[in-house]
Image 1 (cartoon, rainbow, N blue to C red):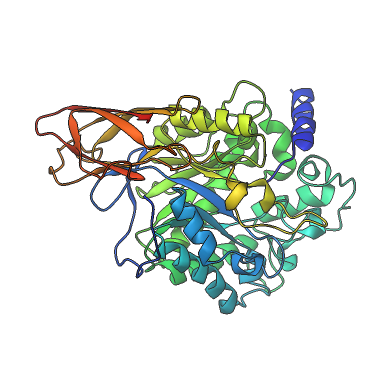
Image 2 (image 1 turned 90 degrees about the vertical axis):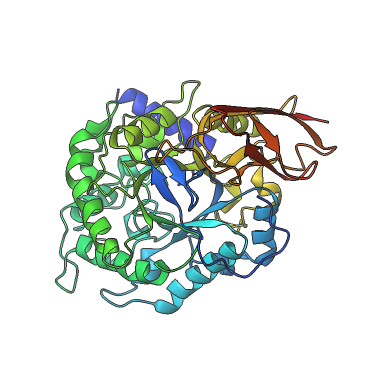
Length: 468
């Protein structure tokens, strides 16, 4: 999803009125899976992994990143600047252009980008993306196919454009209502059944690929006509009912093709703006996570706490999979600071990903990464359980504190298992100094990836990094 400052203000008014650096690409690794331990992502060693990532969704035909210019140089740039994740979007419209007919060449294009990212040790969250369903229902692009867009003749107007069309568009809301009722497609099969089978087909392609974080089931599901009941207290009936049933169906379908990768379910789109999150784990799958977005406005940001509290309640991983859509570096810095305070993994939406008339999409690299707001130090892999971290961009001081025991078992790591902290060159142009309690530095001076070995018998490690 992308929102300009003006549309965010309009939406806010309506709601108010309603109440590790990789020098070169290597051979693709053979084992790089992430699992979970409660709220934490964990790697194959049991270390807690934090993700700093970007979104990459190409919204117009042919709907894949390479056609938009993303290539080896961009993957290298992401790795060099500490990014270890990409939310890699595809369009249902591209996968299944006609009911039951799959375009495997299109899926292969998405897979090739995933494989490119994997060569740079970057995880992909494969994401089925839409914004306002389809152009026939008032969207700016057709993420979902025409044949699945059943408006029942409801008018498109009034259509003020995305995202306000959600609030005003009769065709928009009727289309979603039909989707939640599993309306029959032209071939006699329900729309949700088509969607779940489509996901199973996609997952077959990625099931054995390394550096696949998992699957984001649906981007920003909209309640349809029920949306006024979701403001300001959220959508408990919708999220626990039709939405959980639908996403559970998709989770079960994917598990028919892939038993290991994480399944990320999403709450209602209203959560993007701070309404409470009622979304349960639809199937109780222990290898699941909550994908949520932060487009809260104003000085009180409830998006992060709502999402993480909901994930904690179900004992699953919570990841901020969208935020930003802005070039306001001060705002982005405040958001990134908030994510650090909550020890959250995140994926940035770069505003140049927004395709508008006369402005083609651009890869989320280079100046689009908003350095220094987004390029910042973080604990990439912790041989223990994080307790706190913080970065002061003004002074360049980064601190991290962690317990020396595993998040999954409470046991201690062997001495040779390292903690890794990413320290960008742009933040420390003249190098850095490290003060450590409870561990020793085992990396070379001023390495972009600070490596630490916990001293035997230590319960807690404290690290402070300052500019030289």
